[in-house]
Image 1 (cartoon, helix red, strand yellow):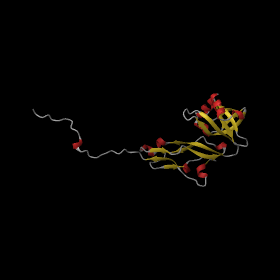
Image 2 (tube, helix red, strand yellow):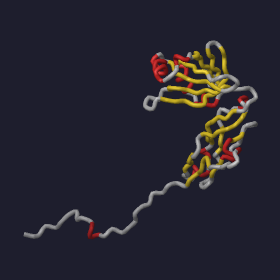
Image 3 (cartoon, helix red, strand yellow):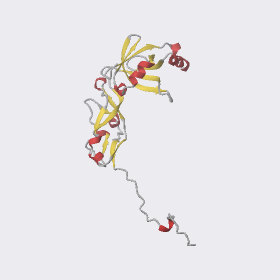
Image 4 (cartoon, helix red, strand yellow):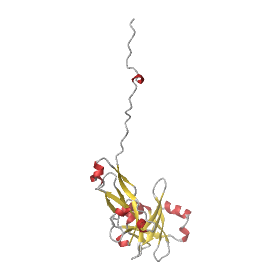
Length: 219
């Protein structure tokens, strides 16, 4: 498995292997219950080896790549749409995958990568780069799905901000939030002024300062 190609092996789960009890039994066998849906086919309940899934989840790109899922020897192209993790231990407990249909657009969340922060004039003036949004929902054809969207902040001065509409999009990619009727062009990152801690310069009354030495009375 490479960062440019993610492949998972899965087996079909029969009706009697579904439900909470069955899911617990699968996890004891180091299998993760999952579902794959969409396209022109019925949803299919599957199970995936936990070590394969955990290894894939180490890569951020896994969440924005077309995946190859081999179910009982039959390859399916899909993207991950939801992942349930154990609330305390963090290991995967259930996954949802959506089939890819050639020529049909998909909605996906992809991460934002901010570059050039160290070179920004605002940074050099001790400004603080504040990230408001870390990923955005896009709409595109599967063949045009980007791994991430780059946001160059190298020119930001203190007080500057970037909005969704400032993101340079690859060909064929649109932002879901800006494509709606009630589109909202929200801020994704801004350069804030440095925080200056106030110093109390009030005059201290000398009478409130304890003496460090006292003169002894003469005998």
